[in-house]
Image (cartoon, rainbow, N blue to C red; front, side, top):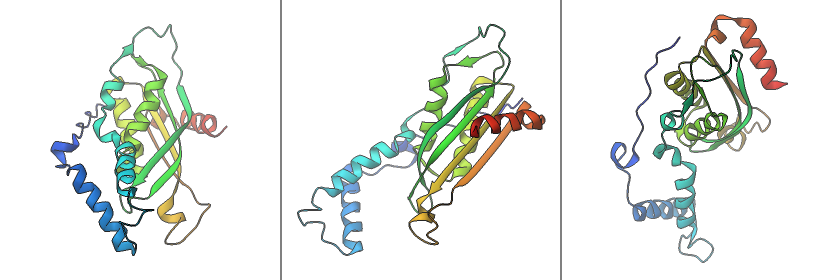
Length: 204
């Protein structure tokens, strides 16, 4: 069983010295001008405000704590000892290389040990880590590490399948390619049949 310590929560104002809102607005105006347009024209005058507001929503995972979501657990599982699986969790994230969205779904399973958690909390963990800048491999690892650290389950399995707009709308322009990442711990890693059953349930 993994004993991976929980990652510290990033507090943006302290850890990243978050600029002021006005500085963020000015940065958007600069990008608009760099693209070749006039940030002062009527159609764009309110765009910096909209972009900054959108960034506040897209990246609110920096101000959220996955550990807090997983802290309320239940010990009575009435003898249930098989996997708990959540399928088709929406993933809306942004690639740290181009700030471009990657969109898809996640599948999460765990084998309860002494603790179980409300299933909505697992979806919330995916959402928290998705709303940060990263790559898909990091997202997959962060989801598993949080569940391992706070629930001490007998095993965790995660699969993420997403389309990256840094690849579909620029560069090679392959619009129908998705990226799949998986990770297994505990019993899922030790028992290929269990991992295979998870994958079949996930894609079934």
